[in-house]
Length: 424
Image (cartoon, rainbow, N blue to C red):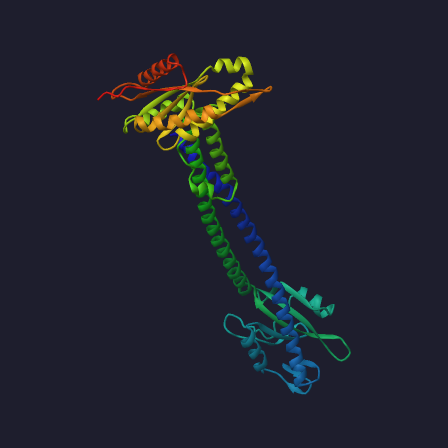
């Protein structure tokens, strides 16, 4: 159970490595976007309110080029009386949603601002900070904390000057801070929703990729596990080999290792034929599925070849014999092994006459070859003993009978094929 938990934790580990950074990135982007939206909104609000405050002064200047004045409760623009004429201001508020005000001195004379009862804030005064910056210093002033009758505003103030250039009043345009913050929250919430959706989508994609990766790793693990138990018949799943990453390379390496181990475990290194162990495994699978014949072959006078021409030439002879046996005797019906030294064992799924025909071709292939070393030439021959599998006997008993027939051939003069008498 503990091992199973460790195996399953790989998906969790991959998701942690991919999703946690995404969540962190999402949080950073959310904070950054909130600050960016706030700064951007503040800039846009300042720009919009500045234009509106300047537009208010310009509009009144087009109505009358004279100066603003406030005497005995009457608001004058040159010769035009503006007292209680709020049409222009109310139209601006309806069009823009922003409140506007004309100050004469530090006192509100014309405004769209109202108190809780709906009464316009005529006669109320600006805050000391605004008076200092605008009326006294003659500067335009933007504040995100403008105090308008106790309510925080985003406000922009523009000085109103007379013909001599002296500041005699102010034009104000502003929006309640809560209203602007609501817009900011709406935009930030939209960004948060987009980030959450992106994180969920990325998490889903990462989960799918992680599961595919873990599935490929699991396939490789199972392949290697079976390989460790000597199963060379398995194939690496295509889903691993068709990947376009290092896991596909790992799968190919595992297949390559399987082939190499199979050759090391099942094949004779000199001739490339099956070794004794691999031959016996094949026999176990075949001898119960129809007629089965075994032929034991031995190179005649092979010791003399090694003694007279050297072991290197002896190896060449062994490889040539293996080639003849492999070319003629192997196939769907037959398989060949190097049994030991100069002995070879052939397993054949078929009749005795069929194997005899093939062995005659093998003998000719072997005897037709001419070997040459140090200006000396020689040929070789081979003797075979052939036995037919009998129901109930072991493979050792079958091989022993073929071996007896082989040595009978040796005693009869070699270079022959000795067949087991067929009982009729």
